[in-house]
Length: 374
Image (cartoon, rainbow, N blue to C red):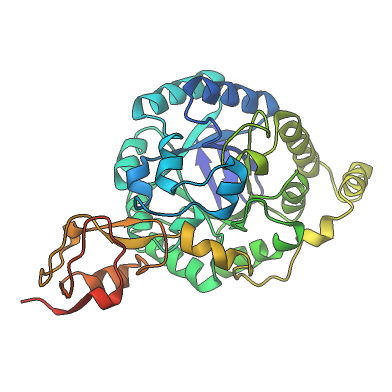
């Protein structure tokens, strides 16, 4: 069975479940709060903490709208860019966090949201963890694959074909170190939308270790996932769910994280029939509701999230009518209602002629380009 050695940890089938406390942006832009969260995650028994490395300008266009859950959870309505700007940490902050994690003996991870972030993180993370919104962002998949590091990829909002296309992009760069996480990209995800059986479908189809990125309220779904064989659990974590911010409400607090990890470690240690498993089953009477139907496909509610969470091909500069479009004129940002940034689509845009004026930071649609340039 497949297993990967990361520092002093083994990740994969027949190994202890690798547990990531997803801090994300729950530090609210504060380095000191981030450190407190690292310390709490370590005390709870997490193997790793994960952040997000970005500048708002690299993540989304200036007019990209907030997702409905972000508006509800943060209590204000603005643009994604304005919301994210308040949640940024600098590269210097991340270097300090990496040192702090090393001192606490917990693995530092961060999801990159740009090529610049990948270049920065490459020297300080042993694993690249990518978000569901990058599943069709093939240049990003290709860039992290080239590093030859383990790639942990969430698969929210995805069809099985899209997962397969992403896997092939990584494999085509000679990287066969992959973990795929079943995920439902809703905040929060309801128990009936979890579909843990899709995790088994993914593992059987692609042959890589599979896990679960949990956006539900509470800890039951993660425990059920491990009972079904999850090799990795990623769970949003906060010190206080009542704090202001887009992700706090769908996160668990330290006492819950500790309880979740304790249950997971019991499941890993005991043999079938052990009475402790029966006690866990009694604690989670609704465990079967998380199983789902084995089909890897977006839920009806996820289809509404795709437009705001995925990426599009965007103009990086002002492109004038009749300009021949080159790679340097393009970038990739949220939202996702333009041309998807698959390798095929990007090749299809490069070399075309702009039919209209395309200002910088504009989502590109096929009707804006046409005909090959000379």
